[in-house]
Length: 135
Image (cartoon, rainbow, N blue to C red; front, side, top):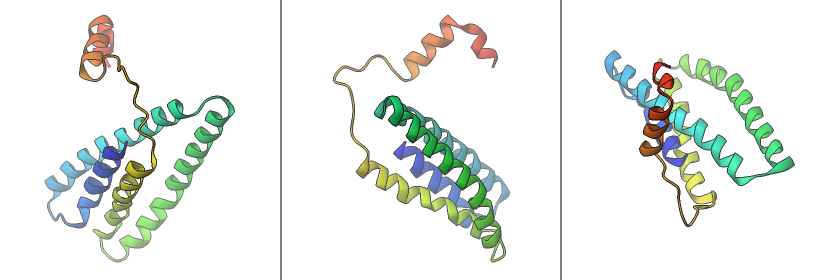
């Protein structure tokens, strides 16, 4: 998740410095990958760290924070857009600081024995459920 936040922040903030449309589009693709890492990482992390009523509570907080961000970030971006079309991209740089804080604050809760993960697991699922490749 912390790596995702760094990618999210740096790729999102790249619009501050680019003047080329292709470079801006490329940075938005990287931004999307970072956002995907952040959202899946935060969901998995919260589901692994909490159980029962505490899990319900933190998932509610996450949903509330997402809703507040969905309302406030466009307003902040719009206000910054009055300065320059580059300025709204600066908001995304917050992700870099949050990523650094996440590395420091989140527990390193790795199991001693890890089951097969990553690309091998994804390939195994794709092999067993070929219809997923169509999606």
